[in-house]
Length: 298
Image (cartoon, rainbow, N blue to C red; front, side, top):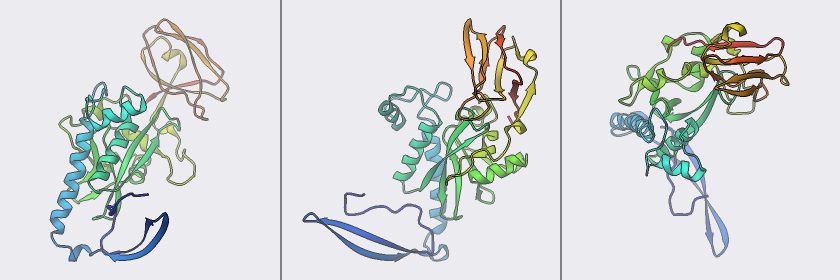
């Protein structure tokens, strides 16, 4: 519902006819008016090259600007930024990928660019997962990924051509990482992406569908390296544990405290656990497996 005399329509294609119904509230009665309009095709649009250049520049600059709204190491928001405002509204202190994607979506909307939030996961859990964003490209008539968390676009300016979440997923499944076109849009370059605790590209192995459907399309074992439980015990690292039953528990002592690790989110996998040197495995259920992350690119 829009309260005003005009609204900016987002995501319109070139050379299409659109139909709209406008409702007006007058004297407490809603009145409707049907409207039809058509957009010019690209060949007939004046200054289409300039429009295209401005569009891509706006996507790049907006993605970079949102990344700059938080410290890249701590993700503490910069005071006074839209990201800072969002975190205060939600009662949070540190930005995460969902916050950054929400702010990017709002910033793109303000300059007339349609976008949508997408979620991806390696193991099917909400921890080894990521929230990113796709923007609609009316020049290529496709959705392409812009990721404010890592300060990247999945876009090949030489073609030009963008890549959607599903495009990247297909390449990750095929281990065709050279086919993924990453464009860094901040002065940070690849540092945020490279220093992530796992290879961020492997998160695209499984995509949360836009319509109800299975989340786990592919086994995460493609990007997990199994190690012996005894080999992991006592050694500092980042581990994911796989159980044979959702009711099982692993009990350990880390950082001087007793902890319990369980499978989460209706999967058989735990969230990733960072361990300390000398940690002890106190109780391990039968069939328990331990994995480290495979990093095919980073």
